[in-house]
Image (cartoon, rainbow over all chains, first blue to last red; front, side):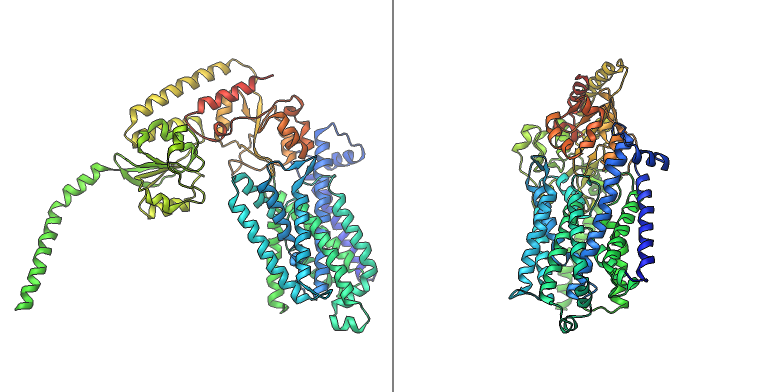
Length: 335
Length: 304
């Protein structure tokens, strides 16, 4: 870890602690810090306020942290893969594929729970992975991923899945189903529970461990394909690993929280801005900053519109769109 | 000269016609006033409709029930795809209300279209009015609004006696129901859900609040939200801790709602198995079947 990264990593960890503590206080039941501390040390599930703290507020916070970290890391990987700062985790059609899966589930099924399994996240994950596979198949030639082709394939397949989703929504027989689909598409952590958290947590941990070994190749790839090849990086293999990792991470997050936008675009950019393009701790800091950002957005969403909170995707868009415009205008980034 | 004569030939009859029209202006206006009425609907829109509408229709299932209660049923020219009560309505031609089949509706030449606030978009209302079809919109937040709505419809359709007969009968029945529950000491707090994911409920500013009061209970949601059907978090519902939950039978909600939200098994309604389903059309529609709706709620509240 470089000297430059240490203060930033410590600051992001401190911010995370602060946001978690604040997040534990926001809710319908009034709770003070002493009560929160007491609950965490001596949890009594019979008390509804303690139950709300441990079973509802805490998993929501952890979900926001994992989703933020997952999307930020995915965005970092995608930007490295296509070597473009405007790339994001949804480039591969993951979000629209997940949306189509969820919409299929909400519109066509009469019961959403089968054998104790809540189906929409499962359908969303399947939709995300199938769409990503199609995009990757269209964006590769003879086993090599072609970034430009992949981008265009992502745009085309995303449009197709969005149109199919739109058709199903339009044909929806009930206003309630329509509301569910619209609500899902804007992203939310309200459904978070301890039972589903191991999936995004596992995916994120596996991705970070894998990327520790790939850190050097990843940094070189960020400098451009030609330079990476000159420096001995196996570009084709690295790109495949990045795509599979990013797709799995994004799929897990989108399946559980809906397509929350702009995290994967903004955070990797901020990371490189603060720590440099080839910083050794970039991925770790990117994950921490993404987690802080999304938890902060969720707290803001809950404070602005209690009790249900605004969809978190609206808040991230409020920050993300001006940032995107800034990137386009000031940095003259080209596609 | 020839040109002057030809101009006179064309000009004179036109002049006569204009003078004739001018001299008939006042009686024509008076006749129009006799054959039309200027009214203001519940949203404050002013509109002109025939004094005796002969071709009417509704764009809401509840409004169709209201029209069947008051109007001459022969004057009802169509129904929407969701209008399924009374059974006689099913024999009428169908006009899709969402998305609105504008062309089909215009082809039926209705004198006036009735609807309910929130069911037909303001945009659709504006488009219909642009096409010369007046749209009369009603708003219901209390049970008394249904009575007023029936009375207004009776006045607009020249059926005031029929409307009064129905409203008098409904008022008497509701008074009896209210007196029956007045003696019971406790009013259970009832939460009615309209959708499970996300959890939407009947808010404080809906007709449900008045209906459940008449049935002897009280709406568990007492906070005022901008939307009539607010989305609630699980924590909020835990805090409400309702005595009764309406939205589906215990078995059905146990395998869906409470399976997805196991934390909510802590609420009194689940603990005491006071979780009930209710006839959807009675619960959702502000209609002349309000007495049946209140009776059904009353029956549920009396169950052990």
